[in-house]
Length: 513
Image (cartoon, rainbow, N blue to C red):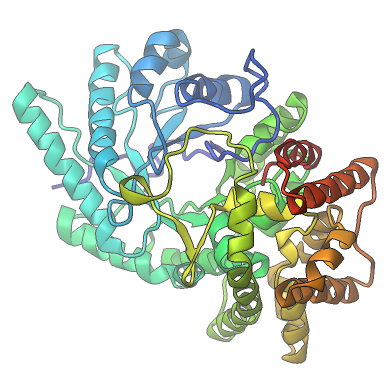
């Protein structure tokens, strides 16, 4: 069969994607109750706000490991029909489902997501709106091209069945699938994934995909390998995409999942220019909750306008590694990730204990049993990236430093610092920004009784040597944050609940984690 999905010249590829990542410290500006936690029911209103009030061109509707309003399109079109007549779903603004990965998370939700996509097409048709309003989905934890094809084929089978049972005469059967690539190794070899997908797509559907939107994870690679490997792996993926485009002629529009703190990507309303310099070749960044709700509204709107314009017209060429350079980047990843992983595995129980004091911001399902999955590092279970990051910042030991100092020492010994600086131009800036929230007194206390924390202390000292400056607070909010981190540490050590102080500190750094 031919592929009825639009090609890249027939549609607007969105340049800003609002997401439901629960990293905001502050209440959303659009809520009347000043409650920072957003319920599943409220996410429909949030979606409209992101389009109408903030100027985001896309909203990711997350079915992965969380509760979800399945009637999202019905509610959007019934409650805000006039807006969507002027700004039509699937033509002007985009709603993109992140599906459950049925090879990791039980598939209870995916059938409901499929039916939501199909019934949304019927509703839009009956209202005289552009159809289909939803035609792309994101597959998290993509590790093989055949899984993308499986999603397309199972949707196609359900669409045919729905047409037969309900006498639906329309021929909407084909989804575009966005691979979300979440490990350092897969990012560094992303070309093979795309090549396999293009070949299987042609074999299965009789044509190559008209374009590919490939999603680079940024938080989970940092959680699993550390700051420097996560950034370098993102650059490796962009290079792989560039080679794939040249070889096949299929355009790739990269998405990257960046949060506000440097460990998770460093995109805030106040860092747009630095971000654009760092991630040349990216077409769509995620605009997560902290970006939207922890900064002045006028700054948020201005930054989203800047991103929409810059990424549409001057996103820049993707970086390209030759084989020698790719080998050097792989070696850097190995050097930094080795120290990071050893340290975090040894601190996993400590992190899990403190993560229970991190406040929730969305109605997530527990990542255990039938309804989810844990994040793992080796044999150790970890919280997700946001509470993980929140734990270390709350103690005044930002996770940006874990393994980084020892990695810099080893990179210098092997003559790889120039390669590192070339492919991570904002490294010094990110380390300095993270250093504003460093509490050296807490780190000294932690290091007294733990070789793992002693290694982190060494990391900080080696980073300071590399930077040629002392790290620590510089402005009033940084000093207050340092004091809160001390309170959090002593409350925890005294067996008392530090949750209120954890939340206060998050407000000061303008991100939960």
